[in-house]
Amino acid sequence: MKILFNAFLGTAPKFDDEQLPDGYATLSNNTKSERGILEPWALPTSLGSFGRSDTKSMHKYRDQWFTWPEITYAVNAPLKNDAYDYALFASANSEPRVVYNLNAEEGSGPYPAVTYPLNVPVPDKIDSVITGDAEHWYYEPQEEGVDSTGDTDGDGIVGLKPYQDPEDSEYDYSEVAYSYCYVDAWGRLSALADPTDIVKIREWEYVNTTAVTLTFPTPPDSLLLTDPLRGTNAKIRIFRTNLASSGTAVYQFVAEIPATQNTYTDTTYSGDLLDSPINEDWVGAPDLNTELYPNGPMQKVVVMGSDILVGHNKRILCFAEPDAFYAWPVKYYKVFQEDIVTIETSGSNLVVLTTGVPYVVQGVHPESMDAARLADPVPCSSPQGSTEVAGAVYFTSETGLHRIEGYAIANVSTGFIDNDSWRKLDPSTMILGNYDNKVFVRCPTVDKTLVFDALDPNAGIRTVDLRAESFVELEETNDLAYVDSDTRELMLFDSSEDGFMELGWESKTYLFNDPVCFNIAKVRANTYPVKVRVEYDHATTGETVAYTKLVESPSFFYLPFNSRAFRWRTAVEPISQAAKLEVRDIQLAQSPEELV
Image 1 (cartoon, helix red, strand yellow):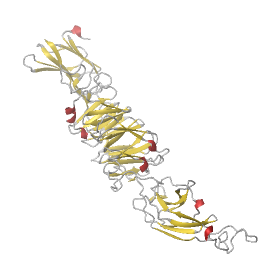
Image 2: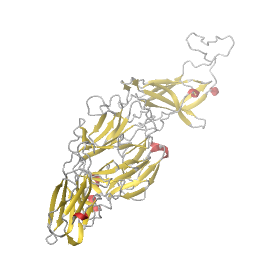
Image 3: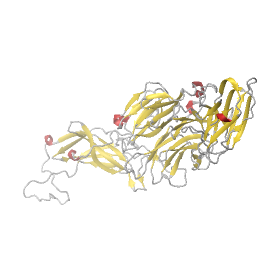
Image 4: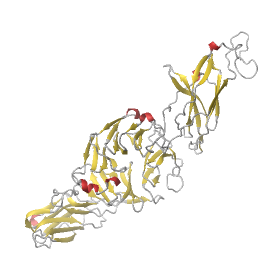
């Protein structure tokens, strides 16, 4: 009779150590899962502290790492041929910000060195509108003998005033309103200001005979008036209503003037007005303006698919205008009944995790997004408790770790851990990350990090010595970095070439109907030594009897046991390994002939 340990699955604390299915363990720490052998992760390596002792979040930007003292989510703007490498970021207690490559990495850190508001301020209404007669309105001469230049009085004005004022019935009268927007020094467009009161203008023979003088308010301090690095300045873009072919009034372009110019006189003929504004319904992302956004600022921003920016606050899911990362039109808003906890991309879809029911959002353009409410009411428990692995979204709830794949939802931890044990891990504080198709669940309250294999639902639960304040998933290399809770250094997981984590593994307890005595053991591994412990519970006293051996070779060795017992187990204890340890199997036998 013998026992062969060769599956090395993870743990399933839902079962006691005798009820565990074969292959599962009572302890599996710092062990990998995918090859069916017992092997450790490589040690993490430090990428640096980056000048901040209170770091909670990080983002890799070009040559430097951005750090923040609060939970912050950052993405690179999905712009084609973006010469300025815009990156934007959001957090629950701050207004959304943006950086660009001309000064974000200046100085010695911490970075970003310079940030800007993501939103372009909405202009105040035009201060005053004054009408009068236009100067030098005229038409081309048609009478014989008149100078062809039309400059009859030498004032440089080409054309002639009419010899007689037209009759009132000959004029075309229109009622118009004015608005304007800012074009900041980066070329970003604000929303349009509130329209002015109605103004009457009169036109005759393709000429606007009314001069309308507009006085603009002083631009707000938050407007980026000038960018000395690019040598660009902000402008005011003026629009006036005009009748479209459908008979409705639409804004059309009048003129663009420097933002520092506070007046402009408009005499443009209606037929000479140009394009309508593309930004008529644009607004900024939710910010700290509680009058506009009582549910708070944008808390998180992600890229859906390849080019759609998505953010959320407590109740609103918002989408940026394509190719305009600073514009988040109201018409794209999705408002939810439940509070939004977090959002996570899932391939080309988006999963919205709420305090009630998850939603899957799908579409190819912000205007066509459709939100499907899933059938299972599973609330998300933690704002940092979600991650995406192999197209599926994993998230934490009070009842376990759940997976959403397509429109199906499943509890992936319920087979291994019961609800009470899961709740003791404090799901409201859990932090999720992913690496190598594994889901890492950091439980700071109990100082544990659990690992689930996303590709093998039967692999069980493992633990790893990883104390993360937050996870940083590196898109270019698919590596996992994390901010260490103790040192606040950025650590790169599983990255050392000459050091490995000390693994620990303990088998289930094997229970026999009749007492047996195992006195021979063998360990097959790629390298030695391997520290093995074999133990049993005494058949009459219940005392645990253990023997620990530093195994130096694949040869069998004798166990100093002379008692029979019903309950046997074995373990691999942690030791420092310069070379990667790979244990193929452990065998307990009663005679050498039983070994393989």
